[in-house]
Image (cartoon, rainbow, N blue to C red; front, side, top):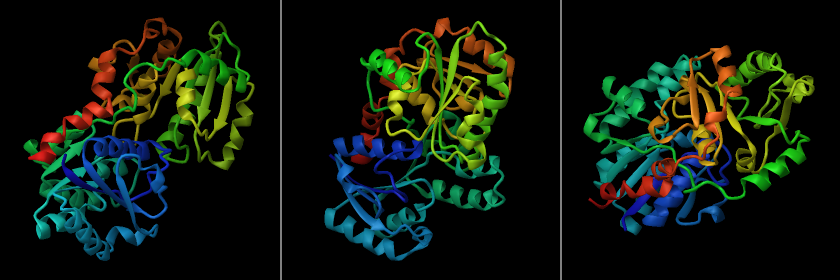
Length: 371
């Protein structure tokens, strides 16, 4: 059992959004197999840290990202617990890992969740080139860098951001290892709650709706996909939209109420909606990184129709027939894939769970920490 410290720069407990879930569940299984200490911000609910010790060290102020005082506090924890491995989540606080490695001689790993500068470039942030310089320096000085997708690894190597021998694939995983058994009863409950006809195909989209890539995807659904589907009266469906942050100008989608759109807003248990849905629709084309909701959707037995950009990073070889990928912004092919979905109704294959199980993913990292 290795001793590990993970530096997490923002709130992850309770985990609600995809990024929070990715770190929270990674830490859950890392702590299950190791002696893990997580240093994070003060507004986490530390009682939810099931398998590890969480230290609420950082303030919520933005200057926490550059505050050198925290390094001395983390050094004390490392020395007291004789910790040999430090992980920094994302590159933003990775300079701390760099300092800790040089001063204490520990092994330092960066767990990146996107090529961050590329993500910000795609959404038009002018300072992405400055972030590229910093991000490249971080990855080149870490002992190993954990990437979410093979595509990110190839990109980082090509851009000389990381040496090939130091790049490790750590995909976004799922917290279940087989199809949920309660899908039928949960489906009935969700249909009843939202007055959805029992014979309707339930199309589902969720995400943080004030995040530009998700908002653009929602506009594509409202202005392109749904009007095209309405022209096929023989296809009985409802589009259910979940997520926080919908801009006030959308008026909670009330203008679309009679056009087969159901808006549920933020929901406490999004997994119930995954269980109820027939098809998860993912027209996200910007933002970079693996779209975590696709991974979760198929884990809960939902078929997926996605554009090419939205499916980047998904290991298609383990998905069977559960996902159909169409060209970005190709409305007609997207609609056809949704309507002709019979081949997608089989269960998610077991090989999918074997590949995306967080427990299996973390097991493969043990040799790095124990070396």
